[in-house]
Image (cartoon, rainbow, N blue to C red):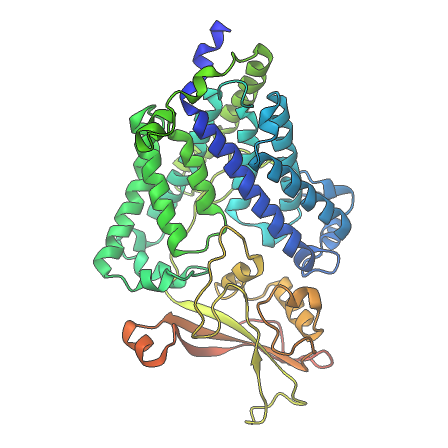
Length: 490
């Protein structure tokens, strides 16, 4: 139809393909993480059981298919359904049908994952959870291959990237002094929640380089997001800057799918013409053969676009507030949220090391052998190279990082230690290694260590990648029969 000419974004067909398949791929990772970890963390016998939440909560913070009851079998059904639907999107199958088909698939994915997040408690309390929910809803209205992408939804994705980047930039400027005096990246690579194989090398770079990192971050998050709304080469160049800065974060850290989904969303501002200039083999007129947009579909998309505009009032007000909230949802559906990360940077890395022993009594004699539990992602053994896990999310390891930051008394941590004393197989499967090969230790304790990366000279002399110094005991030796002390703390 002629009247929809302004509505059709013919130059953003590649952007649509990246958005739909990329968000679908990351949804697949999120559902896989849920399938592997939800039951030991939050299941019927988990560290924070969902049935207990449902019994004590007068209402959930948002909609969930588990509102009327939870079972581990039901959780598996939800996760597997999400995996199948996400895989179909990655393969491009719903996109081959009419526009209502990918719409339905993405909305079901959104509702399924929203159901999980809304009962996930602290294990799902990360900003990228609500970011994935919002992305699933937004890209649902991009339609199928039969008609051009709607420009209002493309712009809505730009608005999402703007809030994600500019919100994070403002959180930093309003946050710790280290972001204003350009010293934040002297500490971040070492103290970030989960370092990766390159983090130590990044940490050892010269101080002038770290200052340049901070300046580049401020430019990418405080200036560049405004340029996303300029169509054509300017918007494409702004998207390229966002993507390159996010790729550096991917190379140097493990932030689940946060950086990966930012790359996918930022690609929405790259035009087909820009892709053609970059890779001449890609045609510059991919979207010109699409059929005209049906009126009914334009009405559906415009209604969704209007909803996103109305919901934008609260995050805009938050961005302008001196008391800016970080990673906040303003409605129960997790749409048009506020984002941000690392308003302050931790200066010292404190790791909680959990140990067990088979000794009759946990005294300090040399005969008592304490064995350390190895986690999959968080630092432990001094010589071990940190692994690359992102975009996969290790939820237990991430929360272990938060424990020393004033949150040592967490109900889930006490239950976690109890599960280790019981040698619970599901809990042990969350770890990298069980030092007792399935046997139950008699005693468990937790100690705090200061970890820092070795210098190049120290690495050459010892082969260690970390140096650690004992800070103190945070959980005294505790057993199933006799508890060794009070609640974790210190």
